[in-house]
Image 1 (cartoon, helix red, strand yellow):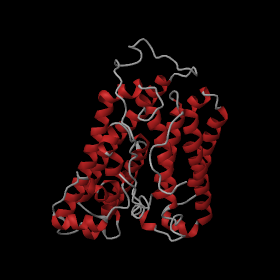
Image 2 (cartoon, rainbow, N blue to C red):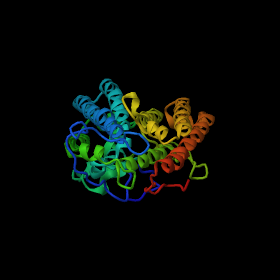
Image 3 (spheres, rainbow, N blue to C red):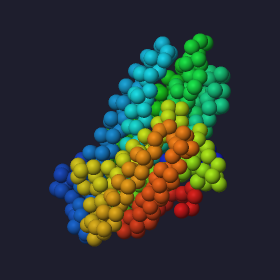
Image 4 (cartoon, rainbow, N blue to C red):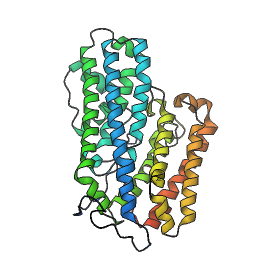
Length: 363
């Protein structure tokens, strides 16, 4: 799929080659242990840490949180008042934040399910959403429907300025649409988690190559891709960085609930945790050290902190900050650009990974 720059859609990375299926047993231990590669670094241990301590737990947590969201949404739909809407908002925010922890994991089962496309294409097309509700007929499974569902659609439906009025009377179709969108979201998350708990885990940890289609190549590509999305659709494009200073505040992620910066900050924090293995085991930062790239590893980790702190300096809601906090936004944009370059150029080069996705602004 191609980027649509005018609508600022966040699409999942589509790599040139799928993961090669490697026949392997249930775990490295059962195979008699994994062998270190030529640098003395145990890639299988790193991939096992990613699968068992970061990726699968993140999807499991997201699945649980979606269940909590479902309960809060149904309470609101049953009695759509300010009290229930206020109670729903933090649950909705927490669920979207939990999604950011799997945003970097858009390969394997997630790529097959087009999880990022269906869960987080923004901005949502509110006109089409309203048309779907009016007709009462729609499909949430076709690729053409990605901007009519997911978190951005729920954000619009539940928290736009006239949401309470919309749900107050004759709202059967609207309530059903919300429930259908949430059910579709829940199903896709469950499908991806089942894939990881099934055969894909062994496939993932069993392929220690760095060529296109390998887990390491997927990871490095996704690190770079998420940084491109942060620099572009999440922060830069709405702020006018690619439109001669013309701002598009409504195109921000989490516009209606006013949580754009919170989402961006969590996304970047999740990337950092993935990059360093989150302290639970080996990560990409350790791999760089094994490749005699200690300085690069340190530089990347330091730049993560600088970029995260610069985002934290921007207050939500982001559209208001676009007017009142330009200095902080410009500073964050610079730090994000530096980190993007380190990952997309230096890390990719040192790990022997080719960046296979097409970026959006030719940086």
